[in-house]
Length: 333
Image 1 (cartoon, rainbow, N blue to C red):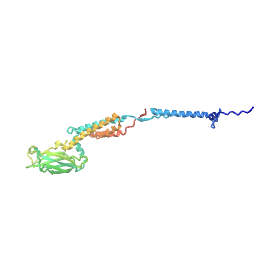
Image 2 (image 1 turned 90 degrees about the vertical axis):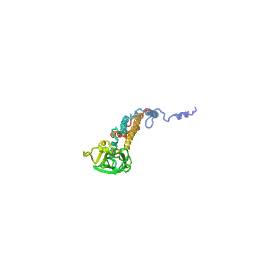
Image 3 (image 1 turned 120 degrees about the horizontal axis):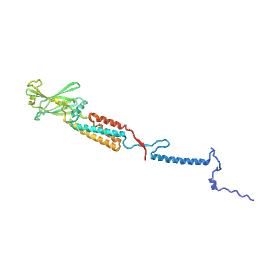
Image 4 (image 1 turned 30 degrees about the vertical axis):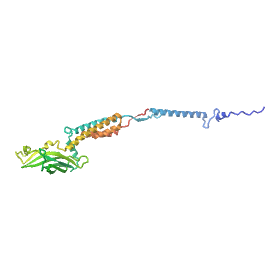
């Protein structure tokens, strides 16, 4: 019997077969090679599933199972605190509008023009008032030679100044102190000296002007009017005849008409600014814009209000707009 060559295994089967295919073969660390491959595949599959699950969680806005954390985003619309501030701004704008109506009604308003101008004189520098005008008779003709004697109190001391009208009945006095001033107009008539007295408010400088101007026209009464006036000493006749208007001008002294006109103009300005501030506040509430509410608050404080009520409340509203917390809600698709 001849020896037949030993049959070889097909090369493709040899290539596919593992080097250690015996049952029970183990690796150096004591684990089964087949088991290691299976475990690695399972781990890759689990990782892929975890990635898909995380992506789904981020998209849906739900919480993370591993940590319990939640993805948040800033909420749309006004925060309740900002909405309350917007309501406050509307109230401030209303106060400013009412204040504007008061300014625009100088004869019936709560605060009169002379009171407003007088308050401004407290901060005015000395020698910053200019007083000018004309003295005429009842027929409107200019009076020449009328002596104007001004006296006012300044830091507990009385100061005075005087001048005389020219041929056109005009006068001009400079370097006066803006304040309440007594003006005595003296005119010699025959054997008598007629004296007309008024209480005048000298205007302070306006805005960036170096001087404040007060321009008035005084109408001098007739000789018969002075003759009918009682004498100070109770006598039937007197050399110095006086008509004193200051008791009737204690509450509302004479003042420059243009200053009163500026007062009315300020009133319309306050009303317009109040309407704009109210519009911004309403728009902020409708659109959910905190920035519009803040702008409305800034505008409202410039409407002043009676006794600076709008200034105080408006400033408070501006500060509160910076204290509104961010409102966060879960992120959703």
